[in-house]
Length: 330
Image (cartoon, rainbow, N blue to C red; front, side, top):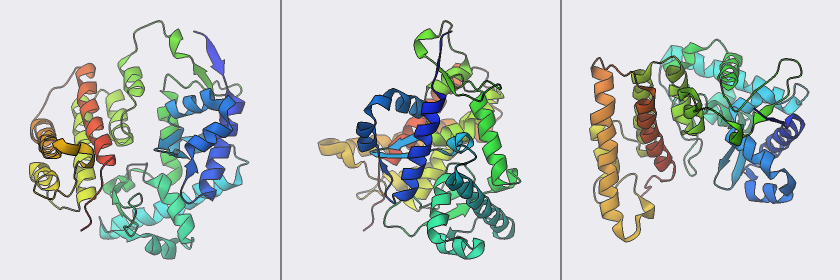
């Protein structure tokens, strides 16, 4: 298989995007950055494919996985990792003492001694870890808060989370890291000669980040029913977070997407808004009633990885749709 090595370019781009995203409160303008670095667009595309660079609309940022590949001499990166460690320790302690209690950025700043700007920058990465029950970090107009979950107890430190991410990356067929020089080497997609394995297909599907976070390791370990269940739970938690409702399951979905003024409206539906809104309400109710509930309350034997990928794809699709909607404020 032919290999294309772009280690110097990738590390340089990661450094630049990381530095620029820290300096800009509104994020790095992706179209402008790509235009200014037009000769490096293939490398940027590869970094996006590896999920080292995240693009949300017109905004670029580096992902939590990329922190492992920023050089040790990058003082800002090392400071950020240290700050994330302080915030993580506080969230873990809060969960042990108070379970799922909301913490504002001000609370975390006071508890860690970090500035609110440093706390906010750290939380941008921590929300990618899957250790939070809910958060409002990306919701404009909402006082920023986070709610830790039991997942904080799975790790001894933030560094353990980074180590786990690096292990996941080592399983990524699109990323090869020779021990001799540490260079990032990316195989070109046209040189794949064999049918991809289930794990390769999982990575190539580019599922929603929440599906990847909660289901990938379970999928690798062949716990397929649990992988599906956790993906469905992510859908449920996301709807609860965005709607502000306390209900669960089908009741949650009916209230969040139903009614004359739904809490999560399908704003882009146009003249078919009512029909589309009703349709998506039943899709969200269906994933609870027909997929999540059996996996949660029955002993379901699921041995087929390819059918599992279809289930995960459905959950990912719903999560991506949620990200495109907004809470009704009035």
